[in-house]
Every structure is written in C-alpha cells, then in structure tokens.
Image (cartoon, rainbow, N blue to C red; front, side, top):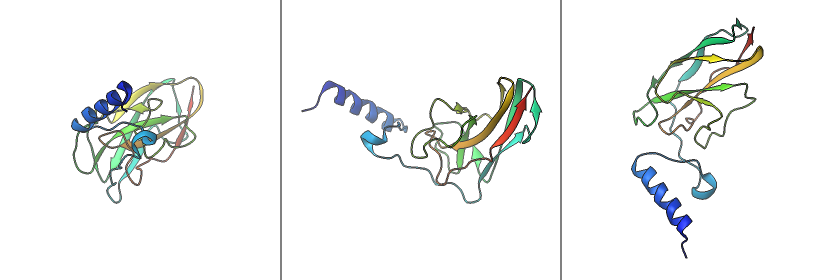
Length: 149
C-alpha cells in the first residue's frame, strides 16, 4: 500500500526527472549516473598560488582545460561547473550531487571573492556536471594552502 509520503516522494522525483534534474538519494533510488569526463580534462586554481599569503578577503580564480564551463542544468557535452572546497580533508561523495557545505558556482562563474579568518587554509576545486555530480573520473584540482593575514 502506498502512503501519501511515498506518493509525494515519487511525484517529486518524476518532476525532477522530467526537468532533467536528479536528486541525492542513493539509498532510496540507487546510485546516480555520472557523466564521463573528457580525457585529459583538468581543473586548477589560477590564483592565489600555493603557499601564498593573502588578506582576509581575496579573489580565487578557477582554471579548466580540456572542457568547457556551463551553468548547472545546461545539458552540453564536455562541460561542467566549479565547486570550491575550503578546508576539506577529502572529496565529497562522488556518486551524489555535491552538498551544500561546498561553495557552488552553478552560474558558470570562473572566479569568486571569499573571506576567511586569519590562519592557514586549504582550497581545492571539483567540477560538477549539469546535476552537480562529479564527473567520472572526477575532475579535481590540486589542493593548495594559503595563509590568511
């Protein structure tokens, strides 16, 4: 017997699928499909450089080669959009949409201004596909360390 909650969940899923979107619920619906990464694609941080000393508010510029940048939701081949990991020890789950604890740039932005407290911090980029899911294999920059004054 279906409950209102299950019907509502299935209706919501059907609407998302019809709109070309997915949700993170691997336990309920199975692992999501990952978009293949173009061979040789790589993400990197243009600025600041690894080991740099920066003010509390500074600009991070994202680099990408071997593919293009497109906004979230855009179903274009060999594209993705940036996500910035700040002070994370590892990568997010690779079979789920990238979570809200990571800075999303779903509009296709290639730079951002961030403010961090004084001290040492790490920065890293991971690309997401049209549904914020990391590519297969994931396109991840080197993790850099900056010191905030």
